[in-house]
Image (cartoon, rainbow, N blue to C red; front, side):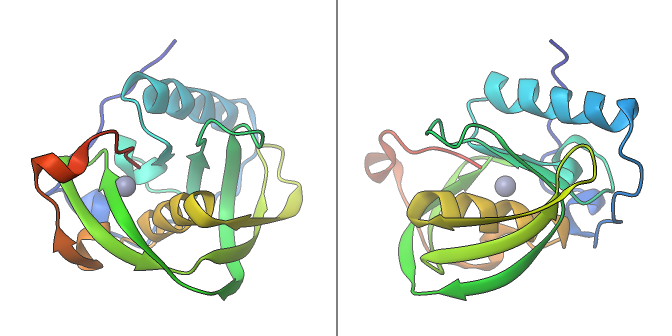
Length: 161
Ligand SMILES: [Zn+2]
C-alpha cells in the first residue's frame, strides 16, 4: 500500500492542462498502483493524477461494478450523447457536493498502463465518473459545472470522485 496525499482545492496543479503520458514503464505502473490505493483509502470512485500532485494525463475510475478499475492514460472523448443530472463530489473538495449535468453516454479512447490503445463505452454513473476524471486532466473542476450545491440531508450515501 502506498497511499498518497490528496491535493485539495485551491492548488495550482488542479487547474492546469496536464501533460500527456509518454512513458509506460515501471514508474508509471507504480503511480497507477498508488492512485488505486489512494482512491480506495479515501473511498473515492475515481482519481486523477493532478489530485496527487502529478502533472500527467492519467486517471482511474472504479465504481465497484463488473468493469473493475478502468485506467486511462491520455484519454480522449470520442462521442457523447444524452444527458443526466445528479449529485457529484470530489476528493479534492472535502464535504462539498453539488448537482452536475453531464452526458448520459460516453465513448472514450485511451491508453492502458502498457501504452496499448483501447476504446471504452459507459453510461449513467460510470460515464459521469469517467467524464469527471477526464475534466481533471484538463484543469476543469466540477465546481465550474455545479448548478446547485447540496446540503447535508441530501448527501446520504453519495460517492466522491
Ligand atoms: Zn474530482
